[in-house]
Length: 348
View 1 (tube, helix red, strand yellow):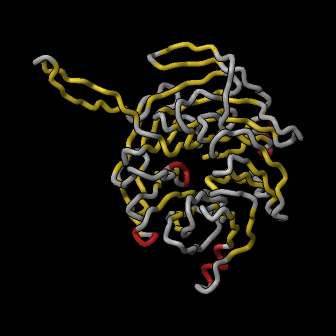
View 2: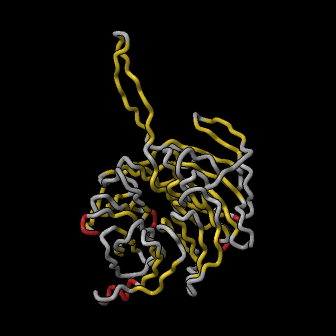
């Protein structure tokens, strides 16, 4: 299990060793380079490299075995919230940045943009940041400049997911954006729209004012078939959105998520939705019915900030803020906001 935290360190754990003895943490390696908190991690498919981002506005590419940094990219004007690999053998990393020369269209009430994005498959990657931009970096090049910059978000980019030639981002501005790199297009969908009504009396006239409010997005993940996107927002709701038309397919409620960035994920075979909660519990819903079928108490009733699933082992891991590390089997990677615990659960 690979974790990052507010103490600026990245740690690799062997959960099997940690499970055998309560006196051992299972720590295998520590990776140190960040000057501020580590906010996200992403591992290549072969588990040989990983990327990390954080509050120091930098993007690091690491070698897992040697604990050396292979690349370091700078250019963001604020902290970098999320990172992902794409392309052949994870040859590109993605982060937030600005894009120029984009033509806008409107279709179905939503904004559609044509974007001049490099479409070579080995040049796809992404990162999202506090400066509301997404940047793509070529891992095989010695250049420190991004190969593409996207600045469509009006607020911080909090989450992203790369699948094939598509990059999905979630932003604090309440919009999910889908970038189709092959077609050179961007689609934006509004998530969690609310109407807040306020009343006022002006010159003895009663007026009702309706204001549109969009809940910040905390997590996005595409389904394995690429037909839908799982979106978490700060209204304690997780939504499954149809990627082709932006329609709501199902919603999942019962957990608490009002103040913190909590990650959700899809379970094995996309059969379930799993999420942490601010009450320290882990919730699992049936994908199609939206019903809660399992609730697990964890992390000493403190915030369970993230979950991730290991499909091959039919297990998932959860991260919290209770200052401990405990697990029973390996998971590819995990994001953790502050020093806390990691617990591995069986999905059966």
